[in-house]
Length: 579
Ligand SMILES: [Cu+2]
Image (cartoon, rainbow, N blue to C red; front, side, top):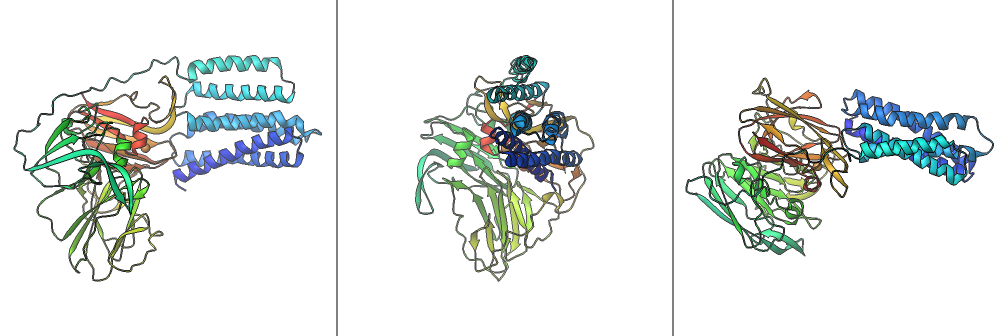
């Protein structure tokens, strides 16, 4: 079992235990003896089963097994210890065990709530808050059922509750340990003096676009979704004039995966001010990285990209050969946009499919009818890619895979999430059961270029109540904090930097560092064995631990965030800062 599935099993069992204890308590309060005893038996078994899942998680290297042992285990033990013996005594009046059963229900529910609501790191305050909640709920239930509870119980509950409120909610912690991020970098002067060799204009505006025969409200560059495909040849100086016609939330252009100088990176409030309606901004950079990239607004990025403010950026080393097509996959108003049309291809012609995931969630791609190789990931060529047959690839949000093959004389088809987006004739459509490529073991290996790391940072990705703001919110957090309270990671130019990224939550987080590609060192403690993987977007699945590294060679202030853009907007954004 993977850590992710163990986590899911543990969660299901915990929910079952809590529900069965509470249900047993309610049934005994209603004097429904057989139901109460049945539910209590289920609850006992489920609570004890968590000892197995928690042990398995600890053995699988789950970073946070300790906190389950510290908070969930004592509460579960208390539940079993108090409710169990009373049940075994089989009281004549089943109502006599209602309060102990409810207590067990509150104890297991509160351990569950700590896991779900209170992000990393678990604190004494969170534990106290959980205990206070359990005691208070038990006292209230006891009163309601007319049970006799000693007066000291109420007094203890009050003391614990006050202590918990002070420590657990962080009211005693001074907010805003994070240094401020600089704002408004001023004039849009061209950053490099060379005369541009490729000039483009992108005008952002509201538009109506046709999606599968339905008119949909969109935000578009030059009236189209995706925006125009920008192409260049290595060595070109690219100049892009961005104009905002009527997007009230503002617009910028971020060159996703293209490691441009910091002031061209297009992050509002960090590298430039958002471009307001009627304003413009000129981007200029040298196209010295070949490969498949894309561009998108970074202003109100979740809604902006979803509504259509994105396009493809392809930089080729020379003239295109064979059939070289980009396939940006995007969901607009809940429907997949159609892929660009491809003419019939003659057999033997080299084909390059540049697959780009512009959505906020992972997509599954499968090429049927031919062997293929993964030539590049995130714009960087792989070393020694071998032919693959009947194998699917998973592309994270923001990620790109270049698949290459020679067109066969027989039909081929490309499937995205089981749906054929291209097909030159009838092929097997049963791609759903194909194995998925693990890029960490694909291609020819090469030694890691560094033997030591100057800086090491740990990022624990999680979900939790963010109580630092006036209005509490359920945020996506990094190291227990949400944007803008996450301290930036400070490096010096030339440092070799290592990130350990741990996903403590129950959902996938596609991680994206601006301005740098990172080299994957290991996942879940196992070193990468395939081609060096230089990524700018990678899925950190629930329970996974990724080790990645890079050389700090592009000074500035860089966004470092989840590319599920709703998560980024809900707190999961921090910054890499050069000192
Ligand atoms: Cu995320």
